[in-house]
Length: 198
Image 1 (tube, rainbow, N blue to C red):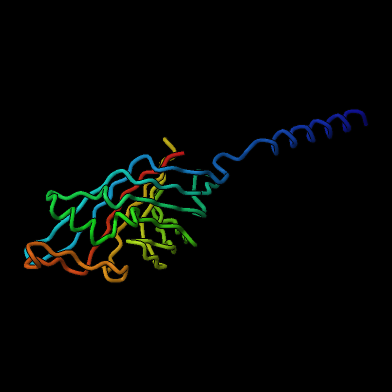
Image 2: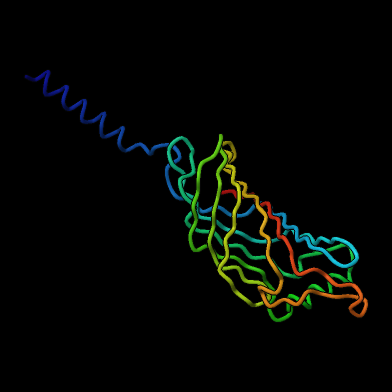
């Protein structure tokens, strides 16, 4: 009887110790951007053009489950100063900032409302994010489709994608130069590559 009682006590202690140990990887964590690459591309009556920026700020709330698998994205915010976008031509930059109303509305931003995360091969994920995108002071609900990759070794999460839109959707008048002889097209694309770390 004493041996049985001792065995029960030992099993109880082992179970308590086991349950007290955190399961590796489980929990929601705040991630911040370590590196950001933004490319804005479009067309004009003369040639295609692009502008680049690398100093935005982004934060994400990511839930990591067992075996270092991401189970959800519950928060995401992004802010980029409009005047951080640069091309190879200062005149184009000046006209772009004017079109973006950068003096009055200095930032381009996105705030997540909801997200769907679907596992893909390996540590890759397909992301569908719905949120509020603000450009030149105009805010629209928009959908962002992206791919994500989690690296358990350094606990980083990389998100890449491209968003196509029309300038006029955000009350932006396509810039012109040379007294209107060169006109930019209304359609643009924003390509982003963001590396998040804890």
